[in-house]
Length: 111
Image (tube, rainbow, N blue to C red; front, side, top):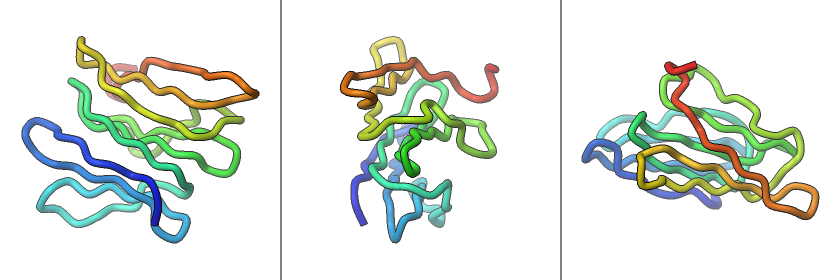
C-alpha cells in the first residue's frame, strides 16, 4: 500500500489508496471499489464531487465525478497531486519531462 489520501465530499469522508498495484476508492460507509491500476494516488473533492488521480505505468490517469472509467491526463508523467481551488474546481499537477504540468479538471457530466 502507498500514497492515497482523504477528502470530504458534502460532509462525508472519502478515501483513496493503492494496494498491490490497484487503486481503490471508498466513500464513508460504503465498500471499497477498484477504480484502476497504478500507484502514487491523489484525491480531492471539488464542487462537482471527488477526483482520484494516479500514475499507471508512465501515464497519469484521473477518475472524475460521474465518469464510468478513468481518462488519461498525460501519456508521460509521474507524482500526480490534486488540489481544490477557492472556486471549488480541482487542479491536477504532475511531473513530466523535467517540468511541472497542470490541468484544471471538470466533472465528467459537464463534457
